[in-house]
Image (tube, rainbow, N blue to C red; front, side, top):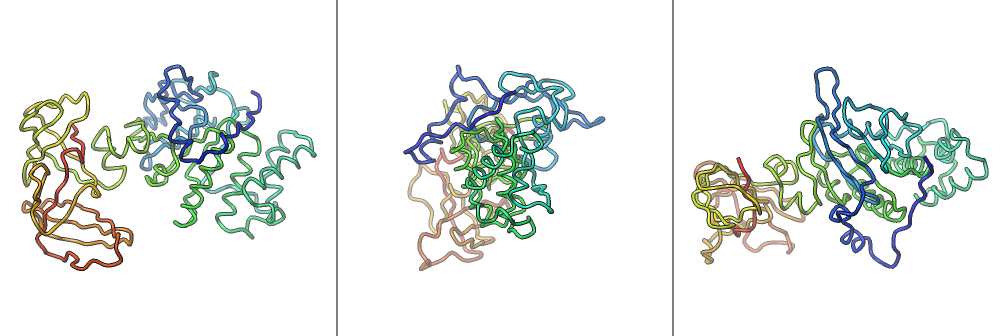
Length: 392
């Protein structure tokens, strides 16, 4: 397989503008770069991945998101060639990868541990894979210089890994992974060893780098914020299967199941029964009252169906007085817990039946003249289209 040369992203436009217009999965004529076709992987009697289908496109930054043991790293390792599928096919650029050893695949993996050679300098670490492939010395020197410039490590080329910070080590590992110009870069929990501030900075660096190189990135993470920040699309995994694939906005605002709603971000879940359905709106009986809510397109929920209502904390409004607008959903409760998070305050309000609803308020001002206190009676309100009704 030939070497994949980076394709520069369009210039003169912001990263956000480029990403908003990027949606090859919506084009029926677009051919996926990576395909998992009915792929399963078993370890003895344990099914790590079960008959999974997934398509990933050129230039896409795709995230596999899920808890430990859901199969996301196994999927990554099958693409890299470190594991073979028990059944099904893994395809790259139309070619089946089954049986092809890792070193002959046009992909490269960056591990969580970085796996740098401690006795080698930064320069030698980046050069290692190129030397193993037999690249000429002058060409190796040019490529290493290009990679060190790309990750802003030129002044550190002679240092050993132990002389670098965690963020700098991460960039050495990234440069080494990109030096061979793979068609796909695989990232297995690459930011887990970094502190929160550095992790957030590195997320945007990776996004900019991926766009400037025009490569396809596939990242494995259990961190929802990380996936939401970096990915064009997210595959939420559960027990070896895909629970939902979508853009960060779709997965967050329109979860396909209770599992996705609870895994991606904070959420309030109220279980109940459909009391009435009128077109695309239902009246849902839940502990503590009645909810008027919109239902997703194609929903089969009918009167008498058990259902759950999922609504994010930031969609709720919390106040001392009952709402004047009769068109909103309203629940009376009592402030049970308060968490001040700096940019926002999170309130846990206990309903008369014992259920807890979470409401998040943005701290737009430095201080509130009349802050809500513990055990204070409050009203929690939200619009009918604020949440999503899902089957139980």
